[in-house]
Amino acid sequence: MIMHLGIANVGPVPGMELDFGSRLNLLTGDNGLGKSFLLDILWWAMTRTWPAEVNPHLTAGKTALPTDKKQPATIKARFSAASKPIESESTFKPREQEWPIKAGPANPGLIFYAMADGSFAVWDPARNYWKSKREEGKARPPAYVFSPEEVWNGLENSDGAWLCNGLIRDWAGWQKEKGQAFSSLEAVLAVLSPSGEEKLVPGKLTRISLDDARDMPTLRMPYGQEVPVLHASSGMRRIISLAYFLVWCWEEHLKARELTGEEPESRAVFLIDEAEAHLHPKWQRTVIPALMQVMETLRPDREMQLIVATHSPLIMASVETLFDAAKDAWFDLDLNDGKVLLTQRPFLRQGNVSNWLTSEAFDLPSGYPREAEKVLEEATQALSNESFGPEDAQKLDQQLRGVLSDTDPFWIRWRFVAGKKGWLA
Image (cartoon, rainbow, N blue to C red; front, side):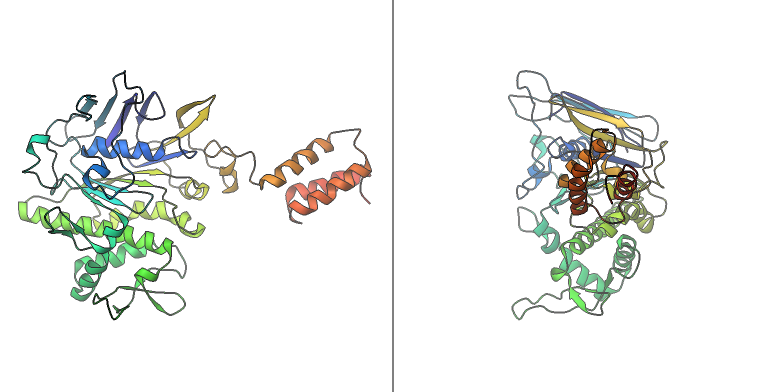
């Protein structure tokens, strides 16, 4: 597990120091302040690869570069280990345009990375290993990195050999075999489904075209139809690709460990960017608690560390009953006087999810639409203005009617006070 990350002269903040919780870590902040960038740095610190270097089809995950080209740039990390923590540090070499690395993994566990655009990456200590440039010709893949299209249709290496068959072929093959892989997929889909009737249940295999000979997996929908996975909603495709990716990684890890005669890895780190992407609010309320259960489904004795970047108040609210300050952490990025600041904040329960909108995580002035905020501000000032008269109050009352519901607490308060003051009939 990663315990600490320190970066200097890289990204929007001159320097950052993060001490991670051993279980759940949350990253919040406005667009453009560096949440995805931090996840890329974490991936590199643990795997010594940049996703877009491994797979040039990606548009994100590029090599991080110094902010000030004339000053040193460093990335340092500390990992937990069996005996004592392991330290790692790299200083950017401008002439070589690379971050030098040491041989051998500092963090031996499985590393998963789910990117916001649907790309995925995995580093598996049983199948990947770090290498220097001069060893490149001998090395196994430094990581497995999938573009969104490759998640579904398969990943090839530079020689044309298949590294992964992809979701469509693997799912169909697993379903025909009716073995452990398909049982794991069914279990993970069930865990990642929201509560209620919308369970993700595999249906029968089908064909979707005369020109496509592949057996196509389907989902059994709550309204009775079986829909091919390619025709499922964006949110469902996000969840089933995540489920497939986790099962594929674990199945391939088990096969590799069987070949080497070693025990399966007991530790995993999962990076996920914009966990809420494409998801309906009721799915947003369950996805993080579900991910915390997924590894328990695949292997009960595994330790899992989750690091999540999110814009969603529902994601934050969903972990309120789970958050444990002894093993979890929340980091917030803010823009203050033109400077990006990183703060580790105490996690306080907000109760109603709308309270998260006005919390330090999202910094909104209210949970109302922007048009309503102006009218509410005028009404709040009017209630304490002794010179405010009935004519002005009636105009403001009409404006409030246009922006508030009949049961809004402010509306009820306004009508009561305005009536007491004699402004309204």
